[in-house]
Length: 368
Image (cartoon, rainbow, N blue to C red; front, top):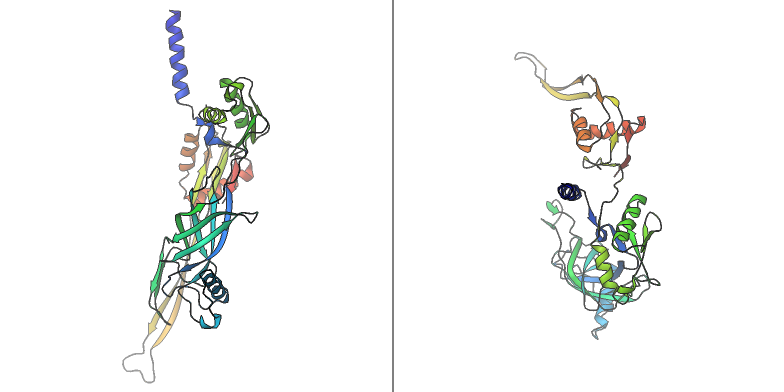
């Protein structure tokens, strides 16, 4: 009988564990010392079929300097029309632990008055870091997620999709110099939470200590210090792999995020609403301008046709009624209560703001 109870307890524990929202440690935090670095460069894009810069002095001088690399000396006065060329800024993020020969994506943006970078070729461009050292070299055909077309000349109609003066080159740069990464600090690893939170940091340290006893300490809301066991001395990569697969349940803050431009509202599972009564009414004012034509009679002398404007205004107000929103413990019931109000998404944003002011919304309200 005791054996059956023990098996039943284990099954219930496994069932509950399978329904807990857990995440891997490596998805919640990253190792201090392993980080991206930003690179930037200046260059030229060729072959723009008349869509490039219109006689920019910067672009002309850049073309002249570029030709000197090939042993050609060109008088800038002869380059009066270089609208097939555009001066651009090239940016990239070099990921941590990138080795020589690794390819990374780059972004190219026009810095002059070029109309489009479609079909252009970026010439060889050194990419430097904040220390002015060259870490990568970029080159290749630009991919623009849009286009610009239409008739030339005054009065010509044009069609534009997206932003044709910014493009990308997937795998367009080759890493030439490695950036050293120090991830081990005197026998310790430091994990940095992507979303700092005291509860999550404490749970993370506790989860690590269950697998590697007395090795982890939560330093603050953003950092966990982990001592490397002797058995993993010289095998830090294996130890990091073991830590990364540890599952834990992060603590999610109560937060409501809304975007008025797109009409989007997102709220987390910890959002709670205290008992509150809500009344929301809408006022609509419609003003219409109509043009009426007044014509003289058939036998009228000296009369003429005239246009007489007429304006009509209507006011429609929807009567508001109080709706009792009770205190709910789960996100699904909060969702049901808000939907029962029968308001639009934008009206719901105003209700959230009013609830927060009244102290009934137990969550952080963030506007994007």
